[in-house]
Image (cartoon, rainbow, N blue to C red; front, side, top):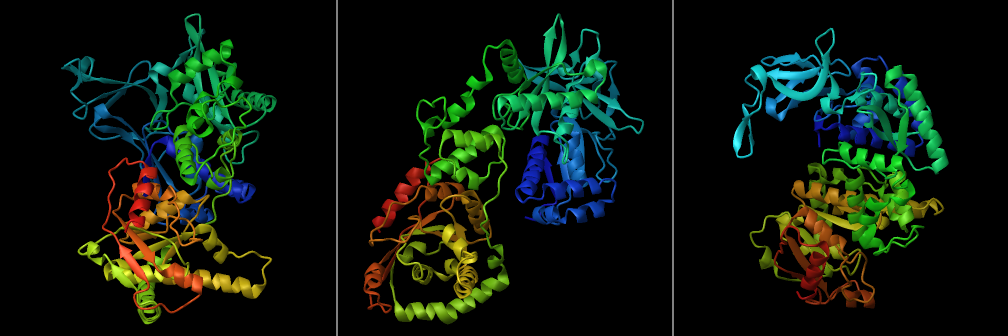
Length: 606
């Protein structure tokens, strides 16, 4: 999309970093990536960008910067994107201070800081390190208990509740929330962020030892004071292996910490992810309460699967057995809904190919623990919608396809008046009778303004067979299939709509096409009819209609099945009919299954 910068909270950058690392691992390039990452240290900006040009190509050559706020960005994630040749810009501010207080310069950023104080802001640090702000940018009051309450305190200074420190160059470093500081029995302040940074060094690219997905450090009360306790989120592993991995992670972190900072208590989080806020921050209060239960033995980790149970309840039945081997009877629509819900709940990127193969609750749980896997291989041809190829496609259509349709089929069109004045784009749905003839007949029936900008969804598995035929086929047959792929893609602007993995990417491409002004044609039965009757529409058409939010045009082909059974290529005059219904719209929030059934009924009744 030719974006230039991403403005995001740290959790999004962490997720993107994880996705890039998993993609390298899935391609078998993990060691090569680690070597390139190490070699990029200390290099100039352009040298780093060129070394990782594959990633720059994927994100777009205009994309150059990550702008991050809302929480503290981990030093490992910051260093990761800097090494890849991107600018990482951090700032600090609050709603009460008219947003920004400090900001990093994109080309002179001090790594690990949140920048210099911006002009016009009065700033100082309290004795305990709390950040105080004063000036015209500070809000005058809060609205609380039915009245305006002053926002600033003594002498107009606003207490931010955040702790910071200034380095020799005047850059502000964020030390954490004041309320989260752990005061040890020795009276020393321990900042959880410092301990978390030491633990996360274990997850740096090419780092030694087992992977650490995330961690938080919480206080454990001790006689009016506290000591730090690490809560570790690890990948899937047997309890004995996970326990040893956690010990090693804590040992390496302690080796980099001062004596008073060292972690002496730790637990392994039993769920696939921490409870999080909408911006991805761990909910520390919930984690601390649960951690105390675990340390007291009130809730054994193996028995706590509540979040996963709740999510899978309607797919696996009212009671999920302890062995977790209950079968998941999922339709394609169910899989899309469950996959999206799990990614949103657990803040993970799950692979659709692996998810499509999951048959039991246990399979799903393993995917949550090991989200990395190969991506679907489908290709979505954006090049077919560029102007030069579109004009070539129209030239071929009016030279060959349109005359052939008129000569061989001369179909009767009913209902074209329903499209009078309609500009589009639309979602078009039709019954599916013959693979080769359906698209030509439907194109002939549409008015030119829709005919000239139409993207057609075809069965993804069939398209993939055309693009990459089996290697054990003879060369002439493989060549014919591959030539067919390029011809059908270029001349009819088709894209894959798979029945298993890759469904979301297809929906995304359909949305992109609509944004470019293209109507989208889908055959919701999912396959060519076997007996001439209209089969039940798959639920995915309802989900696609709901996501696109476009008016839906129902269409129906009549008479073609009889020709196909008689193996005739020439139709009698008036034998073939294309029926077009008026556009349909659905209220936001209409259940996808309800949309699918309504469209099926409308096509049958045309």
